[in-house]
Length: 146
Image (cartoon, rainbow, N blue to C red; front, side):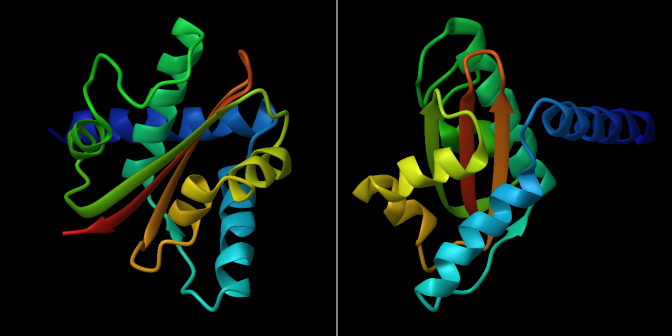
């Protein structure tokens, strides 16, 4: 059990480093989300490692099939987040393809009423971010713990 947790943390750190060296920084995406939330007098979100894992795994899946989708072989968003150990009372997801950086992805989402609603969801507490430079796929997973 201890080895499994250690191995999972190593994989998570490797995924973050991979993302940063390939043009994506979850902390920068978080800052862009929180800027929008602050403009609307909403509380800021915090990154959550479980949501980051769920978002990254889903992003990698979309890149592998070269298609945007909210479902994958692991199931729905709700299933994928729970599989990473995040027991939620609310979850939402934004996905995108083709934007070359966080600013472009955020601009695209903020120009879409459904995606904007997720970013400005007043009850969310946490954010997870995934990115693949194989087609520039992006995922944001929002959550509120149970």
